[in-house]
Length: 166
Image (spheres, rainbow, N blue to C red):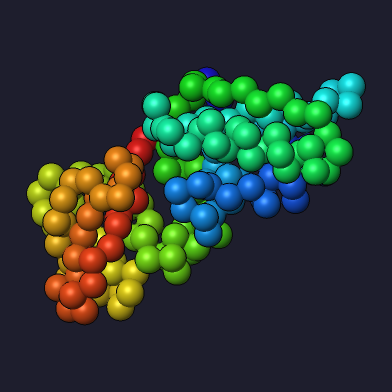
């Protein structure tokens, strides 16, 4: 089973880093870890992407955006959706986690902590506005299915928490 990224051609990385996640525009698809491989074979770029969850509506947009970015760089491109292995929040880069926090979305915790927060109401999610862990879950679902809605008890600001997916 492949759990890490396959080969990504170095020449394609700057192009792929310009493609934003349509739901979280401060993250590139490279930061999100959805690009599994990207290679150039006989002048054609082949990119494999994995959705953050099955049925993610952003994948069509991401595929189109990859083709557009590669076309602007002079490449004909084919994009393939890869469902196995399933995407995990572990694939979000450290740069991506930092960008999430700056954007106002709490980065995912590890799987055990995530369960404690979502099922037991433990206060482990850090408010991206003020840094307090005095937070509470408002709803299991936030702006998208992969996020939960939280509120900080100290600064009173609402925010999304990106759920841990393994």
